[in-house]
Length: 83
Image 1 (cartoon, rainbow, N blue to C red):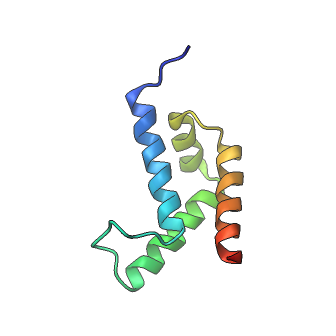
Image 2: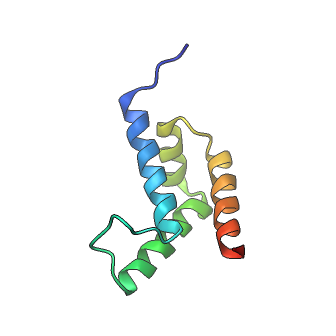
Image 3: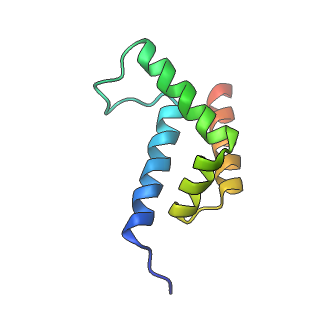
């Protein structure tokens, strides 16, 4: 059995927050109002779907395959748009 490093949990939390931002979920963010929400959402979506170097690095640090993460993010965001 492999033990997860605390750092990988931190990077998983970063990806989770990014997914929440991409979905426009700001329930716990008092700083996000009006146009700031739109900017955060747009940047989070771009980060998740563009697959740049920083995205790949964060995924690797979280112990998650970047291709899988991008595919799941795309599915979640498309499902949200269709509901």
